[in-house]
Image (cartoon, rainbow, N blue to C red; front, side, top):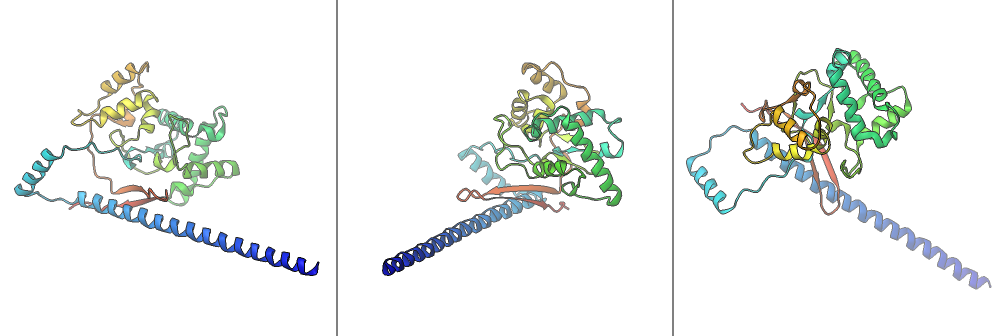
Length: 298
């Protein structure tokens, strides 16, 4: 019996030892895969940054280069560039006027910000009545306090006295890895759509994400507007054209105050030196997101 117990004890020790070595090997493999995915995604971001930086350089193409490019275009028809996966900085909703002048003088901006919270983050607070207004008021109050202590502060560093609001704000900042509002899947990062900066600029529709267009024009009209804006050689979108598309999507009428908030009729504006780049490694599904700053061309 003692011999049999010894054998079972040795087998048990060997089993635990083998299990521990196996777990360590699996962890090492996962760690190696994550590291390689991180490096590949980081390399893609570096390549994208260099491409963006190159595009900002002013240069005059030689006639020989133009002829080569022209012949290449004839051989290989230009493919339509895929839309950016992010809402550009010039298309973010700026809450600074609400902090500086109050919601009474910027009622339309206040209602739009509340609608954005309701459209994107309603699953987080489970349809509590007018919760988006309470949370928006908490954001503005916290931001006003932060501005008094530090004129230049980061939106993601806002703090709330209510722990529930703080946790909810953290989830909004983080967002989900997958987000599709039409399929009611996940929610985006608040930093992609909202900013607090002491500037007076209209929201650029040309660089706006379809989800943001849905806040202004409704979920049905947003995809059509986005497609119309990004058509090849498309004329600049006007308020009247947007109203016509919304009418065809069964939206009764657009609020005239959208003219004061949105940039209609122009696709070009001053260069934004801050840009957010997102890249993903297809093998490991590791994604990276970095804010980069481009040098202004001289």
